[in-house]
Length: 328
Image (cartoon, rainbow, N blue to C red; front, side, top):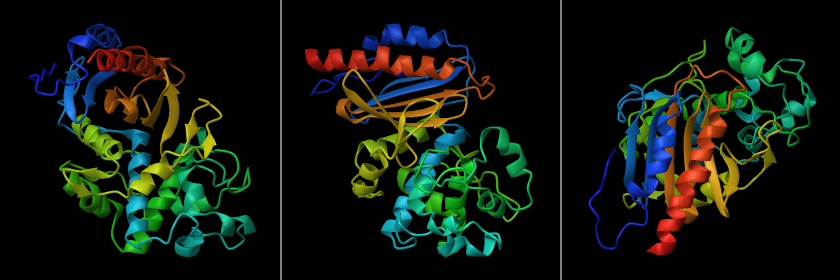
């Protein structure tokens, strides 16, 4: 546990206020790390069950979809991409099937970000077939439409991979190079190379690695409105758009924006990046909170581990922060 010396003004939340929550966290068999930050201060930093060091990179799984969203926002601000209404075939037409459904021309960058492309998912049971294909971009673009573009939410890693392909095509650089220059270097965090498709395009939305403290730094970037250490890294309007509900998950019931899930607890809006197994970045702006949790990735699908992590936040950390703030 990391304890900070009190300074004036006294910080709202303390490690002692989280004692019961930490006890519950220690009982979760798959939890590997927990970081709680308030007002940019690290209140708690814990490792569980031999989890990796908090500065060591770990696979953040689909939490990297939120990172891809950030890269798209920066690319739009810099003129590398045109905007969220840009048709995806403006960059990806050479990979589209010759007999493509005419609706493919209607799919936009925004549709990919909000998981509303309408194309059959490449996640879940379809993931293995997709990543075994010789061309992941063509495979994703060749999927049949099962909803209209801009319609139902269809959570698909293929959608964020298409964004990675667009970033690569439009910039002439790899997604890894952009992630390092646009996020890693200004945030002072490591983003090592990760999996690529057969054409060399970095997998968009899975298998990226960050350390738990790097994840917290990324969450803080969003909490601070895109400015950190006095430097503008991400447009504030992009954060606002990313945290504006566009659709709703048919499984969790949670709302979804551009790469971020959206919910609320005890009157406080919560925005979170969610990676398989429990790789989580929670941001609670109304309490100046950023919370990171990492987990073992061998958690069985359908387990209640994700719900248990959310309860740590909603039944432990948020009430503690609220009580401490009310009493300060």
